[in-house]
Image (cartoon, rainbow over all chains, first blue to last red; front, side, top):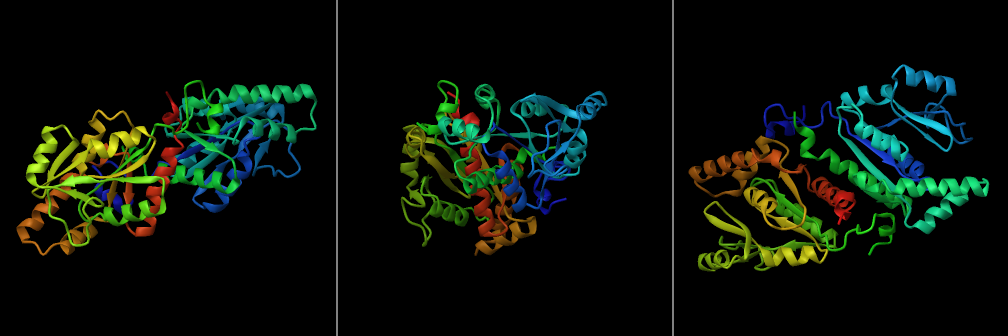
Length: 210
Length: 210
């Protein structure tokens, strides 16, 4: 119980049992991972929800920290067992958010940062989770920059590149369904914007209602 | 037009013609004035809406900067002419928000900070202003502290003090109608909370819709 609770109507309370789910999505090339890593580093009260994926681990990634890297069979089993809140296919691999990473921690009042695909973010909002989802859409400063970043990523074929760009365009159309738009023009500023959103959401009176 | 507009659906735009009205209210003793002064000092893109009042000017106050100090007759005339968005009586004096301070500037995309009584904040939300109002309720860290601050203000009679405390209690009951609760335990932290709310509201996607 917060000392501020004495100002609230009976049954209302600040924070307790009401972790915030800060869901960050955006097209490939938006630079989500760097921003998320820095936000987490600075805020010890914020935990990261580790998604499950069937895509191969990249050299810089750590299993269980960046993702739970699982086989196609293991992912099938998670779906069958109802272990995932949502899952989606992206670039030929599957990505999912495990209930075990999210529900219990939010209920214990833990604020969570969730890194998902755009469709996954919308699925999280539609899910049965009894917690308010804060949906942040991250974009690069311009479409040219978006294309440049997607190109810079790949040693891919022209065809794969065209597909990635088309997927990004499709994702951008979902912006109106999100709560916040964060422009990632420079790491420091994008981090500050995400931090401000989290601080503001923590001060929301709605979150105190019974 | 923002460069980010190219990511939005046709007709949507970031910021332009959509100034944010950040309305700050709270009981006497919450320390609104100091926080507001500091927030304004740090953010050159934020303007202050000067309220009209019939209460006498305090020594440290400047007419036209802190308030427009007007006579009872002049205030009557403002009401008759429809020059006020809302007005309310507090401690025997009247306070009002002039349309001229608010409407045109918001329409021009100017973000505004409005310092009002609690009832005035709720009246602003119910007003015909076509702009989203962001309602912030500021409180001291505890009820004991609130009482101490109200007492410290007055060379007043016990009766006047009791009345001020009763008014504060009445105001506190309005908290659920506000958007954000900002605890003013220390100036620096309260200022940071208000700044975060403003930054987050500026990133709200809803504000880009036509």
